[in-house]
Image (tube, rainbow over all chains, first blue to last red; front, side):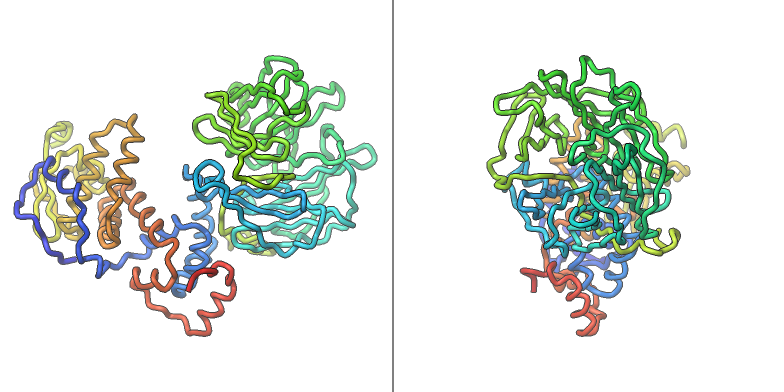
Length: 393
Length: 161
């Protein structure tokens, strides 16, 4: 790149050098931009949101090939999930009218607030749906109509995959789970149904596009009409359950790759636990527990599997209008101890350092039945079926 | 020579593609993995190091970035972040392209990150036709092919030409 030079001196001290950079003046060189090698174009594309990438497939054939390649999709996913920016993260909510909407997480914390997006999906006519979980930009939705029906859906690319017919009727007290099996590069859906005194478990593999029965669930799920879905952390689905003999709380996990059950050690609670649920918060396993109607505590397992790493993130006192059975479910944690919570179907922001609670968020109009966090990714639910593992990596 | 590398006050001379020489402190130059490797392999710091792909204007910017990051203590991440955004704020696309090329050549990861991100932020809401021009990309689609690719994701083009 030959360029005009305004420098008259040939030796610059570091001080002078620094001074020069303070005025990155705009000049006419921008009219002729240098060509970037493909590796740098890739670096730039990795930093673009999904919507732009979808449009930029139209730039030329080599961009289409690059953006569509499984390697790029994985790299982009790694980039958005490892980065510390909130921008690619969204929250999907299911309203009581059985439709799904989404908000950018950023818009719940920062101005301009609450930009709500009506999501488009092909199963709009289906009723009685619920969100099983989300992973790598894919959201698993479950419908109980005549028989259990599932979809794996990427709301950011609008691609959907209807799971192969399951053919089993809805059973009261069924729980589900959804996640990524990294060793096999596969996505799996888990269904735990309480049948004749046992918890029967079946696992769907997206790669095989079929269901398979595995060993029964080893502990006791609380069989309400609707059991909360298991939570994905570290390649395993986690449920709060009870030990069938001692009736004490345990956390049972199902490893999605090995399809085996384990138990995760719990923190040393400071008082008797009245109610307990597990959640996944920014990749960490967390426990929300109520101690005898006094407060709601949030524990986080900072190092997965290490009992000593359990840390109490907050102890939230009860406040007026907050019923004893509807404790706030943390959905997201900002770095500085500020949590987005779902409280009785309304978003709130709890600041655990200042002990303030903003509730409801005035800029969010809809009451939500369910909410889950997902990341904007290019992962396609249709790119896994009947493809040998090697070809997809 | 190895012992002199320890000396923080030592300086070395970098030469831009258009022949300008820049005297920089060694700890500033070490922000660049390329220069670090050259110094580690006992390349004499008395020599002038030519950087044939980087013009003087870009090199001055790169060294400004390196100096700030070399001098700041790691505890001042917030200060560095605001320096970075101020540093790139009014930069035009030409300067950004040169910067990303230089950061890549000199292996300065932090600078490559922020410059690539800035370019991405600038183009993300632009129509693809304009992006084509910015990157000098030839449209190798036939009109039918282009229409087909677009049709697949028509919804993403709402509000775009």
